[in-house]
Image (cartoon, rainbow, N blue to C red; front, top):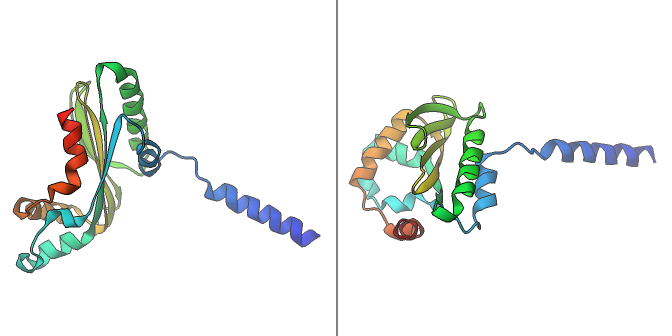
Length: 179
């Protein structure tokens, strides 16, 4: 009987500890994927459509560090301004968590953008770009990878310029822009 009580108590403690109620971008993305005001897009490295044999060793290393990109965009309109402000405030609150280290921010009071990251300077797990404009909405872009660093990101940008981007993966975002 004592073993069953001990086992039940241990199971309860493990369950409570594993249920982290702290907000995160990942949870935010999952919660809003089906919301009609949001467009969610997952982008794989295949979108770049590059010939890896023509890349330098540094470019190949940067490409290998990139796993995927998640994009969540909120389209604002005259009818959903209150929800726009609420959702924008939620994202800003999540990004104030100390695990998101801000690299830079720019813009004015109602329009702006920020770039943050999760990890260390030499081992970045996630880059986060948050941009908002009252008239059109906001977007949160999560660039996920392994052992990314600022040099890899800059090198990846050079690969982007040389790539033939597969626009099929971006169709949902194109529809958002047209609305």
